[in-house]
Image 1 (cartoon, one colour):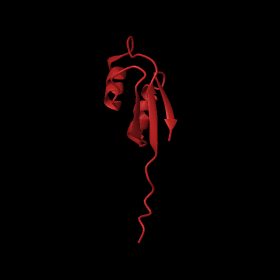
Image 2 (spheres, rainbow, N blue to C red):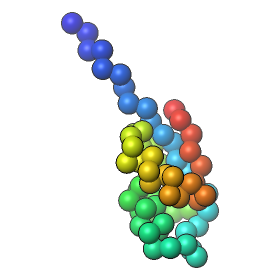
Image 3 (cartoon, one colour):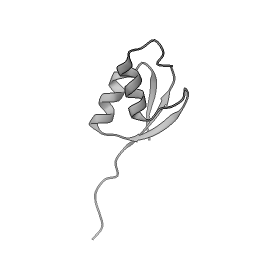
Length: 66
């Protein structure tokens, strides 16, 4: 039998703006997402926890679906 579980969607997230001048919670959220440098692009699976973090820092990142 073939496995019919759908593959999870992947989000391509790019850090466009520095977190300097924003709250410690925003900086911690970016670190938790996996960012280290400006203009860095990471890939995360699409789930409610990641979506919540992205909602919090949406003004600093660009989000694309793959």
